[in-house]
Amino acid sequence: MLRIGITGGIGSGKTTVAKIFEVLGVPVYYSDDAAKRLMNEDDALQQKLIENFGATIFENKQLNRSLLASIVFNDPEKLSLLNSIVHPVTIADAEKWMKGFSNNDSKETPYAIKEAALIFESGAQKKLDYVIGVNAPYKLRLQRAMQRDHLSKEEVEARIAKQMDETKKMNLCNFIITNDEDQLLIPQVVELHKKLIQLTIDN
Image (cartoon, rainbow, N blue to C red):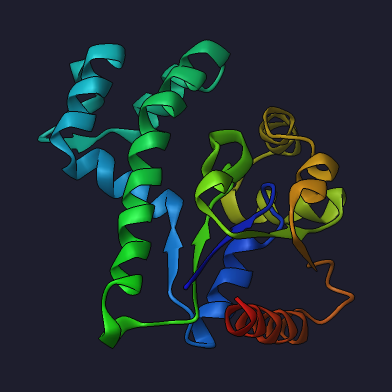
């Protein structure tokens, strides 16, 4: 079974692309959702977070995400520290999830997908066979993120500025899907789905 990543910057539409793959029957691991779950359920991870950010970030063992965000958002060192604590746990959880398909005949699938914004930044690509990049023009990404997250233009620009340069990120990917609202998205995903199935046969 091939392990595939999907990544892209804020507003690129990587989650939309992942949902189309799901419709085609491909299992998808959503890293952001998994990280939220793990921070609420993993005792060892919770303890590390408390040691570094204080007990007030949890209330009845549930993470106060807005409080944690306010602590790390404008502090690059604290944000880096948070990522260094959470990313290894999420990467290990994704690897365990993917192994579940490889080791269970009833769940066998040609490939499974891990959707994550920070695949290259976290080093997660080392655990993947191929990475798909979802690319969209800057202005469109800005507009989508403003509408989706109810943020100002300046707030979205600040978030984009904290991410890896989009051109650099796309150059690191094995496949690119363009989500610019000019090129149809579903045919691109279907075509890539066929290519990935062929790759599993070739390998």
